[in-house]
Image (cartoon, rainbow, N blue to C red):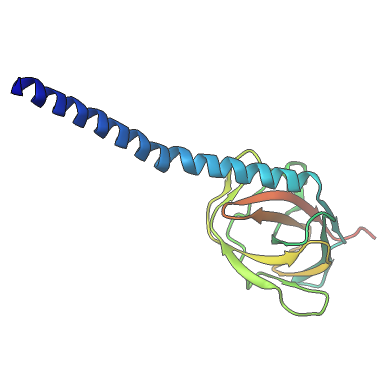
Length: 187
């Protein structure tokens, strides 16, 4: 009889250990994926009803500026924006273009309609709306309100560049919900 009790205790221990392993696996692997999928769906919904208005890139010899508005009447919070220059030859594949080096707060700044500098933040990882990592290095973004024009000022302009602007949204993970670009108006 004691031998059966020992075997039952061992069997119960194995079952409990397997249960703990399954729960630990679910928490460490599946739960973050479920959260990412939920955040992705929220970002996708916001992206589908958001429009971007961007003015022409006005430049002097080494810098440029433009006016941008992220419009979504159903939203009252903030989004983040990132801006960077690329050569105009990249225009046909603009949706695939990422910064070649992380744009920083010394490269571009975003100002509100009052002329105040908007709040800068560092974002380390950006996903596309399919849950794939789009950019995986720290970069500076600016938090701006929906439905309010802002001025984007960027240094480092070179003849023929266009400025690409990413609009980011996230409540945990950060997603690119839109992008736009503009260049120097032709004369």
